[in-house]
Length: 348
Image (cartoon, rainbow, N blue to C red; front, side, top):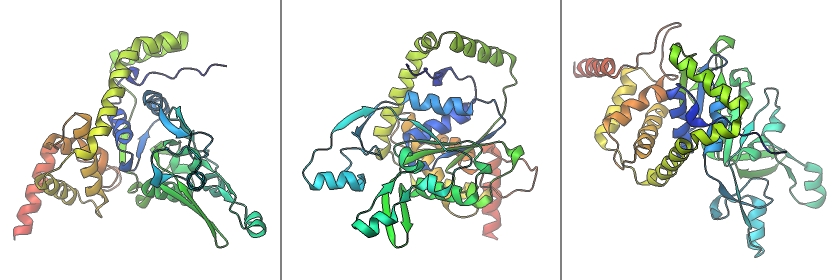
């Protein structure tokens, strides 16, 4: 049976902040994922699957449980390393990026994988049963209702997303494998919040809501109706825009290592974090990465002031100290006033 075609990414109406955050993570997975906070029916899962379909095929080692990249020798799993040491070729095949769903009731063993201790003791060989993190390597790990997961499971996911590896240890036996993935968590704030310590670990965060503009709502209905009636035609209609966006992402990934940011912009990032009362330094690092990724997406090797300003909300909205029901201040002009006020206070 032929797989059903996904909804085109370019056909998603509105929700620009969400789409931008997803694109930034596709360009630069080291951003640390994105948390999408919003009500149901706002195209969260549709956007994630559409992004995966948009991205180009990539080379993977045939029959590898971790979908290793043949040319990335330093990131190969233990099995692929053993094959190379024995002189066996790592046969490449082209595969699309996938979306791996994490069940809400997943146990730690289901997430990280399991070690067969009896086999290790009797045979002196490590036998590892891959988990969700292995399946998600070089793909998108989608966690719906992440706020309802056990905090320990969320910690494991965020640790792997930050480190790019997963290590399983049982009774003195350990196994490590690559686990580089784009982490996308979604949640409805009405169903409960994540602890601040976990919120801070997500690289980016966007808050979305239903669209109130009548014309945009009509466009949503028309696009979805065409997709339900004829998915292939829908994809053909939007193919030029999706292909252009895919090429823009490809070029941005290639350009990103060469993007430079000035000390002036780094100082502005630090001042913004101070003015908004953000704890720790993760916010500064994330804003710097986001601004450089923004510049790459727009085809520039030098970060501009607008790249920094555009990264403020997605990088800081979930990290600010504020009282319940207090609105987040993200107007760049208002932030300038806060920075100036802070500078005056520090001179006295």
